[in-house]
Structures are given as C-alpha cells and as structure tokens.
Image 1 (cartoon, rainbow, N blue to C red):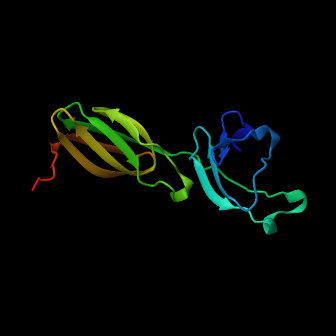
Image 2 (cartoon, helix red, strand yellow):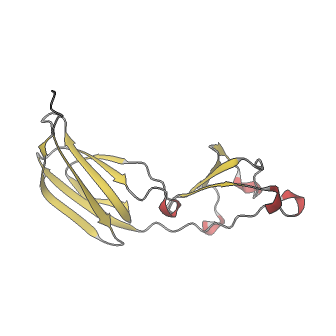
Image 3 (cartoon, one colour):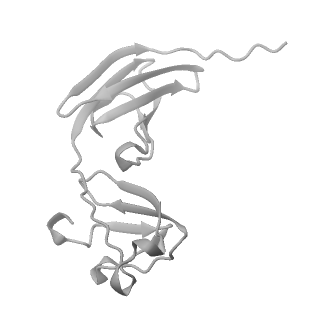
Length: 161
C-alpha cells in the first residue's frame, strides 16, 4: 500500500467496505467476489474472482498481492461553436488494467482538464440548439490534447415513416 497509509484507501468486496487496519478480510469461498481498491493518486483496481478451497493455505488464508499503479495524467482543452456546451468525457479503457472511472460531466470551454492517460469518447451537446459532436481522443503521459473551435452539428433525428 502506498506509504502504508490505509486511511485514504477504500477497499470493498462485493460492495461491502472492509476495514484495512486489520490487514485481512473474511470472504466467502466458492462465491464470485468483486474486489475494488481506490486510493487517491492511483489507478482504481478492480478484480472479479472466485476463491476455491484448494487455493487456501493453513488457517484458511489466501493472500493477494496487489500493486496499485500511480495515476499518470495528461490534459484536455476544448472550445466549441456554440461556445457553451455540455461535455461528457467517457473513459473507453474501462476494465482494461482493472481501471474504472465514472464519466466526467463538464461545460465548455474546458481548459487543461487533468485526465488519467487512456482513450476517451467525448460527447459534446447543446440541448437548446439541438446540436452535438462525438469524437475520441487519446491522452498520453504529460500530453496536452487541444481541440479548439470544434463545430457542433445538428442532431440527426431518426426519420419517421
């Protein structure tokens, strides 16, 4: 664990919070477990697995070594026509490397928004004018991704026959 500081690290198994200061957690054997570890400045870790009795060692213990990856960031700058639009930033790397991130909702203009490295789908909408633009970006470590003056296009509504 980072710096051995458990206070900011959140661990849940099947959505139940576990107290890390004990250093262990009791979990059912033979049932699907979802382990999630979240700690500020680190990539969230998620793993689904089932413990089999054969994997348990003396005293029914099972040890799992987990190394949290430090977050690495780039920045994203966006301005649009019309100037004020709603933006959803959706991480496309969900599940790979055990990462999970909730979509981020912002309004343009966005200036150097810090994003963890990865691939993102950007959904830009202006409900009032019924225009939108959807595109993808990749954030690399220390990169600045800039999209200025992105024109939004009329939302194509399915033709009613």
